Amino acid sequence: MKIRISIALFFLIQVCFAQTSEQASIIPQPNYVSFTGGAFALSDTTIIVAGENVFEANYLKNYLKENYGIEVIIDSHYPPFKNFISFLSILSSNPSELDPEYYDLKITKKGVTIKSNAAAGSFYAVQSLIQLLPLEKSRRLLVPCLQVFDAPRYKWRGMHLDCSRHFFTKEEVKKYIDYLAMYKMNTFHWHLTDDQGWRIEIKKYPLLTQVSSQRKETIIGKPVDSRGKPLKDVKYDNTPYGGFYSQDDIREIVAYAGKQHITIVPEIEMPGHSLAALAAYPQYSCTGGPFETYTTWGVSDDVYCAGNDSAYAFLENILTEVMDLFPGQYIHIGGDECPKVRWEKCPKCQQRIKDEKLKDEHQLQSYFITRIEKFINSKGRKIIGWDEILEGGLAPNASVMSWRGTQGGIAAAKQEHYVVMSPGKPCYFDHYQVKDRTNEPIAIGGFNPVDSVYNYDPAPKSLEPFEQKYILGAQGNVWTEYIVDFRHLEYMSMPRMAALSEALWTKPENKDYKKFIARLKIHSKLLDRMNVNYAKHVITQN
Ligand code: ACM
Ligand code: ZN
Image (cartoon, rainbow, N blue to C red; front, side):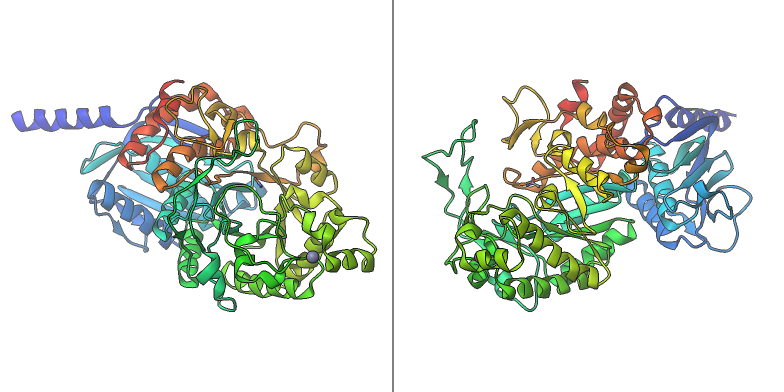
């Protein structure tokens, strides 16, 4: 009798630990969720029926083992009558269900059924299921019964990371990718080259890793005052800094991301932001150098020479290796902030303007990008570039990443070009996230609080419905001039990445900032367990 009472008490306590509809926190919020009462008990005896989703089944199995010590069995033969987690393919002609990112997650007392059209949907169902698990370690996890039907609002749900200004190791990049996966983000924009460092091994040009991946020192603090005026007394740390990813590292990271349904868009900056490359190969500049990899923040005036055919050949050889490494359809070619001062004085650039009957240096930039686009298109890939590529005329097939506000994106969509919105406000996560900066780590400036990120709607009101379809989605950018290590990167990215994921996944009618914050408070306990250095006060102040 005593034993029975204690067993009953044990189960009662466990039921209390299962999340209720008020306590359940899935971020991003599913587009349809209904709690049906009761809970499913997941334990060592639960059988996962993988079907075609072997990676997703193993991902869940490993998660349960690592976080709870629970060892479930994967069996691909048949779903048992009870105590199962079963992956099924949808056999339906309903077009909305043919979205590869769609999933349907049904949890009953008997088991969990995940239905999808493709592995991506199954992966997202697993992410939702994981967020529904209780935080307390137990041999028997109670998961609330519910029905979810879910698919994302946008196709491009991205996060960017600048690995040039500061370098993040292969393991750190993988961890960042894990965070994207947790929030059902599907695009990782990897900023691999800039004035301050070249981070990707190119076999044909070994000096890019021997020379361009290094800088002799780094500025301490900011090169300009709060009004943007250059400071006279800048100091340097007198410490060499560098790093790069070998082609094997890149292949490993691409495969790692791909399994989690994340496409990597590599960015190779041109024609500007190229000083590190020119430090090793000055012959592709207008003046011939010599140069050093930039040790300060800001933009170098020295850029690739747009009148020199061998500079294009250099870039095409690099891009050939880049396209071999990255299987995604998009290659980001930068295109932003290219000073024109060298081109104005360069005989070769001026000759090119004459020969091509161009009006000015802006059209020369357009010539440059269009020439690179032709090469990339000839290999079956597409280019995307920052919104400066609109100046002087858009390359015929280019997609635009709008960062200087949304005007560039709107203009591109009106020209029927695809667009990814990434306006500084609110998509730059290197900006401050609270008003009071007293105890904040140094940031580049600006103010992008989590509510602005959450409430961001990438669909500009000024676009007609047929133009709206050119808005692929949006992304958060994390520039790392002042972000020196991974803990700091976590601090700047979280919880804004969570907020952005919901802005991109969840339909506006299903969004609610207050409810998001309530879910975020629950979710933050999961981040604590993961030892993520998120900005806690941003959540508690709300
Ligand atoms: C940029 O922030 N220069 C794209
Ligand atoms: Zn030139």
